[in-house]
Image (cartoon, rainbow, N blue to C red; front, side):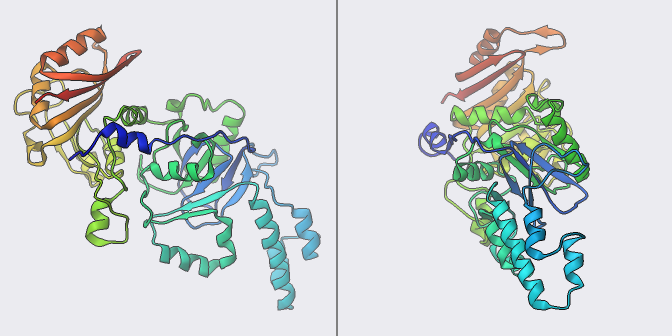
Length: 411
């Protein structure tokens, strides 16, 4: 349950960043079949995984490669005395181990210098011991190339978007100046961008990633319209709820796991208990659950959400909701928040039913459609209907065809 002034808690967690004026860059990894990308800008980036990271400028080169690297290859060839041919292939044929070692030291020195032009972070749900074992395997000299390494022992863990916000704060850059590349295969499983970030999208190859970035750099990718690239509009709704203090995440991502089994951060500051109505495939449900909240989903078809491992139960839907509609969720009640996004306003009977599963002073947080079946409803009429159900509207915002509402259950 909630404790203390919720607005104050949220205010303490909101982050403000200074804008970065550093040159734009993107990144390349060793080939994987599927890459999830959060295009959070491009002067710094995260890498999710253990493949080699190469820093690159955002505009792909014209010779067909992904990008043009910042490494001084002329200096590298001069210092290794390899004027032509593939460096590693030539060195493999050498018989002098000392010469090979010295040349590799030159290469690492030059690559480390190039890495100073862009900061790189590695975020993973592996343990610190696993990451250390990885660096021991490939060589400890690679670890300093990552200015930040965060494992699952850190308080925020993927897909909690506060993980990215933390790194942005540490680097003192705006989140829009970041690019994250991951390799998750679950649809919609990519980490959520912080406020101000551009789209999360999937690519099937590095070539497709190059094409996406090239289109964006040329003004053809329409970075200003994140919805076109697949950034869910519902993330902006969550940001708004956090800003007005209506939805409180936990103090860490997975506090129950951390308390029960160790190995992850834990805290007594759990997030809100949330009933997510019309949860669809569970993308938003999972997002909230990854931020330390206990979330139950409900929809007419919850098979996709259940396949994600989420707790979800069927009901007849928002339009048909009335007395007894939420009985499947009553075993998990009371909830701090009932959340609805992208749906029409429930009937008065539906609004009364919502209050049966809310705790005292619990809140309905809704982003509702004002136009349904060709009929547009005045925002004032929506607010009046909520008041008639016995709830008190404490915050609202209307824009276009949507209205956002926070309404409190009165005791």
